[in-house]
Figure 1: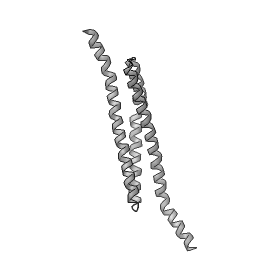
Figure 2: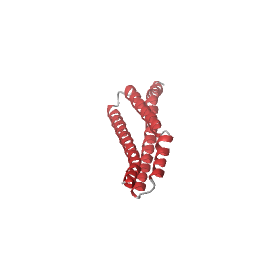
Figure 3: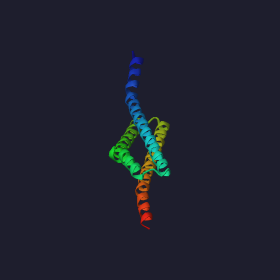
Figure 4: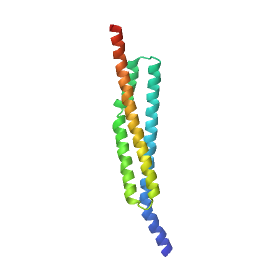
Length: 141
């Protein structure tokens, strides 16, 4: 009976940490999927721009995907939740230092990826906004 109780206590002790890790991984997978889709969208917009398609259509598409769909606030919420789960795991699971280091590295990597994507989104939008102005200046000359 003592071994059964000991096993039960071990399970009860580690279950919340395991649940936190699963929640972290779920959010991590959502972030990776969303960022990959955003990167594909940006690359497609840049290809369309290189083919000299109508920039107003590309800009409209860009705004629909990144501004009107609340992409950035949603991603900020995901990132905040990811950091929250990472902090909870770190505070509750002090015995697994190697796993916590890996968790920190994954969190930093995702944060860097998100920062990179924010810059890329802004750069593409800036390109889409300046090209029509340049064409207008060229036509005026």
